[in-house]
Image 1 (cartoon, rainbow, N blue to C red):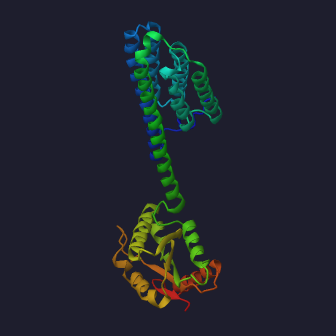
Image 2 (cartoon, rainbow, N blue to C red; image 1 turned 180 degrees about the horizontal axis):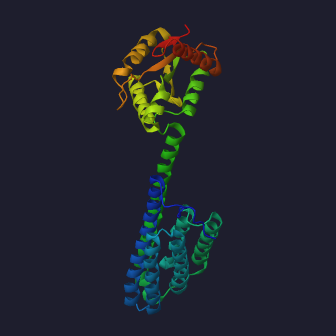
Image 3 (cartoon, rainbow, N blue to C red; image 1 turned 90 degrees about the vertical axis):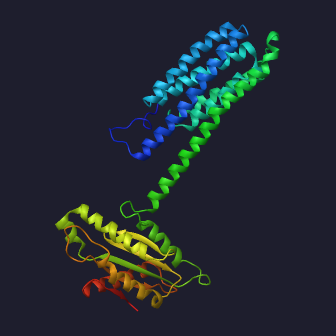
Length: 354
């Protein structure tokens, strides 16, 4: 019945993203628990005051139930917490509305409870749907058929209704707001994971290829000249072999930072794979960009240093201007051939096939 995969982890480690989402879920439940506890406590006083002692004692048990949910929220057993909340709201709506009628507004708690059950994945979709549907069905039936009014309490109905409406609205709005925040956060994380390389924070190969396809596939009347460069770190294997992979990662981070900061804002910098990088230079011709790329290549060793490494850190560059009717595959082959020629010529240089 209960889907615990979202609240329990199979190991002691929990990533920051998962932890933050669990914390936001706990916040939603704590808001609901606090609202439920406070509202029912207020109604204990109200019911004693208007001589509805049976409802007052029922609310004492209700407060106890809502306070219990704080414990389950704390240990992140939101599945148990939401079952307690659902049962209490459903039972309380049935009893209070049966006694005082729909005009008192106790059935309005069923709506935020239905939203909470569906919006927060603490239970399986099937059980969440069943519980939510039962709440909405109960709300409809109570609203349509419970027209009981206690004549001696006519002067209190408006106050009770407004209090119920306000208390029901707080968790409703809070659930919607925090759920939206979780969605926005997750969307941002997923976008970053889909587009960015985790190590260098440059765009990843997938994004670089999509960007290249975008420029290659522009209609002829809209297409602007653009160049691409494929870059490979010289003798990178030596760094890994002699200093270890952590230093190799440090080198890649420093190289990617230097290269990306040397580019224009409109240029696209991506990690193509391993120690290779692909750069796209929109709206520029080869003769306009070549001198700047050669300077970037030449200046690199004076900008990048590694502890316990005395050799210069440099890169080889293949650079081409993509032809008007050239395919993505042909452009990548040409720039790769230019890079190969730069490595063959002795590395630490820029080579173009034009």
